[in-house]
Every structure is written in structure tokens, then in C-alpha cells.
Length: 594
Ligand SMILES: Nc1ncnc2c1ncn2[C@@H]1O[C@H](COP(=O)(O)OP(=O)(O)OP(=O)(O)O)[C@@H](O)[C@H]1O
Image 1 (cartoon, rainbow, N blue to C red):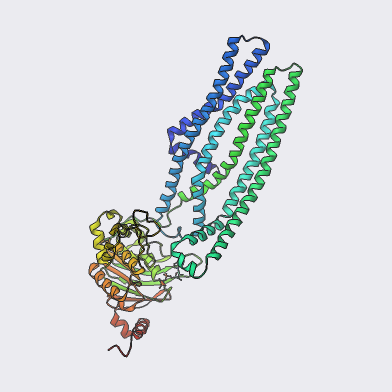
Image 2 (cartoon, rainbow, N blue to C red):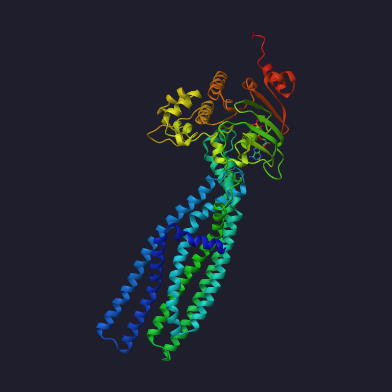
């Protein structure tokens, strides 16, 4: 808690040092102003009742007291505005820190971990709220400490025991409020997974890609019920926590009234008995009201700040998350000779092994076809080659250097991939291709060339705004019509994106032509083969004919390499590859085909 609070408090001074400092100084002044006003009022009352003040002196005291009161209010507004400036700067800083950390996580392990996602949700919430709440609290606290210090002097003069009474009631209030805040934050943490599911159902209901299935399978009502159910559960829990908080707050308000009432009775009796002046009573009333109002504000905000500090811990955890892969520093060579030595991999410590001792040598410049039934581990192998994870056992080398020793960013610059689940970005056609090589996003010539190689240039040129057409109906605007491409056209765009990487030593195509018509597939394979000549290629396909020309074909089964060789060798061997190939070939046999 102390670490969290310290970090949260330091943030405003890091994000906006000068403004935060000025705000603090003005806050101190604003805190002292009410007490100064009260002293002036006391002097006015006492000097008037004792007849010591003439008209000039009385007018001066009255005007001074009014001016101090006005200045105090003006200072409050100024502090409010400056506080808002600091809050905005802090919000920008924390949001930037949070998402920079997420954007720079090298592996996939964290981003696939649901616990990390829950923490991220809380961190995001804390990043938005906590700095503001905490800075506001600090401002309020500084003002109140100054106010309290200045009024305490008055209370000590008029009736000293009141200081102790107020102190006791404040300690009680602080303890109670902190306990409530702890409960509120714990509720938030406990229900974050339920809330994540609510957001998931909510996103599904509005997701264009899910819309077809939701309508056809009639899932709308089911998803709606689940979404509302999650919302009801979460809001019920939040309300219960707030109910308890309200009871505590009401009890504390009553306690304050009793303390103020008791003190006023004692001082009023003293005035009646001539032991205190009327001015003392005025000062006492002002001091008690000032202290109680100030403190109740602080105590109320203490609860908010306590909750924010606790949640802020999640922000610090996310920002301080260690890389999910150890960093390497080596530079990969241009060409890619890949070797897997006894590679074992599973996604989690208690999960099943997906790869169980894979040994494979891919010479530089070779075209390799990878075959295997659904779930055999082909895409997993691709992810290991991109070093999204490290194998638990064994090693993968790039020209003899373990991937773990290479700088991961540089390694990935040397790899072009069309993933099986490639992304269709709601961006323009040019951007959808250009992001394959972000530093050449503005190079229209390269983009068009990649589109031509992927045989999608004609389609894109014919769009309403050519390459500047947004490939989305959702994100188009009134001036620019958005367009939805077909599945096969999207696949070609993804291929063009991969082809932007002209200096990639390794090209991986995971089912890149599954959505293409037969003629299109044939042509794409031919052009890619020409384009990628000399580079190492790994091609995954369930269409055996697409792999026939590969230098090496590898069958993955049971987490191991079951067989390898070129097409002729594997057909002669009569194993799994030959069986699958014949099975597919038989499907095309027809007596009418000669
Ligand atoms: N991110 C993940 N977390 C946990 N398990 C995973 C993950 N991705 C894949 N798996 C599991 O790993 C196994 C291999 O999956 P993989 O996607 O590598 O198979 P594949 O050979 O590419 O299959 P397909 O031909 O269907 O594309 C499967 O059992 C799958 O459930």
C-alpha cells in the first residue's frame, strides 16, 4: 500500500512538476485563508463589543475579513483548474506507460493469460481514475492540514479539550473509511472476471464478424441474457458494498454532530458565565465548522483515495511486468538455415505436450511443406519459429544461433508470415498491405507491387477510392465509402502484406490459399515461388497438391516428425503422406476426366 501510495503521489510531480508545485503552494494559502478570516471576524466582534474599535477600525476589519473570504474562494477555483491540468497530464502519462508496456511485450504468454487480462482491466481503471483521485485527495489533505493547524490554535485558546474530541472523532472516521475503501476495492477485484465476461458478450453482440452466426443460430437472446446476468451480479455486489459504506458514513456524521454540539454547549455556558467572550464563541463555532467540514471532505476522499491506491497497485504491476521472454542481443543473418533439435513445447505447465521432441533441419533457401491433421501442432511450430514462445526443452537455431540469443525485434524483421488467422484491419487497402513493413507505409510503389504479386491489385484498383478505400463498412465515413472484401480477397491482401518484407530470409505461409479459387491458388503459388526464390519458405497446407513441388515435405503427427522427404520419396515410402495424397487425389477421380 505504501509503495502504491508513494508512486501515485509522485506521479503528478513527474508528469507536471511546475504546475503541481504551484498548485501545492496555492493550496497551502487556500487552507490558511479561512482561519485568517475567522481571526479577523473574532477581532471585529470582540473590539465592537468591548467598544475598543472606532468606525474606521471596524470598517477595516470587516472589509479585510470579506476580502480574505473572497480570496479564499478565488484560490479554491484556481486550485481546482490547476488540479485539473495536473490530472490530465497524469492521465496521459499513465495511459501511455500502460499501453507502451503492453505493446512491447515480446511474447504471447501474458496477452493470452486471462489473469493478466483481469489485472489489465483493473490497471486501466486505476490509470484513468487513481491519479486524479489521489492528487485531489492530496490537495484536499494539504488544505485541510493547514486549515486544521490554524484552527487548532483557536480551539486551544477557547476550549482545549475540543481538540482531543475532534481528534478522536477523526481517527474513528479515518479507520472506518479505510475499511470501507478496502472492501470496495476487494469487491472490484473479486468481480473483475465476471465483468470481463459481460464485456465479452457485449462486444459479441455488436461485432460485425459475429453478426451472421448470432442471427442464424438465434444466439442474440442467449448472449443478451448472459450479458445482463453478469451486469446484474456485478452491480448487486457493488451496491452491497456501497450500502455498508452509507451506513458507516451516516454514523460518522452523527458522531460529528454530537461532538460539535457538546463543545458548543460548554463554550456557550462559559460565555454566559463571563469566562469567555462572545468573540470566542464566534471563533469557536467557525473553527469547529471549518475543521469538521474540511475533515469530512478529507475523510470522504480518503475512502476514494484508499480504493484508488489499492487499484493503482495493478497499474504498477502491469507497467512493471517483466518481459515474457528473456532478451537476446544477436543479429540474425540474412539467410535462414533453421534447425530444431529435440523441441518439446506445451502452452502451460499443466497442459498436454503439443510438440514432443521435434528434430528438423531446413537448409537455407529451401522450400519446405508441412503436413499434419488438425491439431497436430503446425501453427504452434510457426509460433515457435517467430519466437512468440520458447520451447520448454530443446532448441531452435537460425544459422546455428539459438533464437533465444537473437534480438527478437531483429529476428522478426527477417520473417514474413501469413498467419492462419491473419488480421483484417479496419484500415485503407494501402495501409492493410503497407503495415507489413511499417517504415514503408507511405511507399505506394512497393505496396502496389506487393498487391500485384499477390494478384489482388486489380481488385483494389477498382475500389471506389482505389488503394485509399477503407476496407471496413464500420469505420467508413460519409465522404468515403467503406468496402467489405471477400474471404479470398482478404487472404490475398494478407499475402501482399507478407510480401512487403522483401528482405525476409524466412517466409512462412500458414494455409495462405485455403480461401482461394483453384485457378487463383495455382497462380499465387507460382508467383510466390518466383518472388521468394532463394529465401527459406515454410508452407503449411491441407491441400497436398500445393506442397508437391517443395524441396522437403514433413509430416507432423503425435507431436513428432513422422516422415520427411520430397514428394516422390514419400509416395514411394507409402506412409501417412502417401495415404493423404491418394485420398485427396481419389476425390478428383471421375470417369469423365480423361
Ligand atoms: N494459444 C494456445 N493455448 C493453448 N493451447 C493451444 C494454443 N494454440 C493451440 N493450442 C493447442 O495446441 C494444439 C496444436 O494446435 P495448432 O494450432 O498448432 O495445430 P495445427 O496443426 O496448426 O492445426 P490446424 O490444422 O487445425 O490448423 C491443439 O491441441 C490446440 O488446442
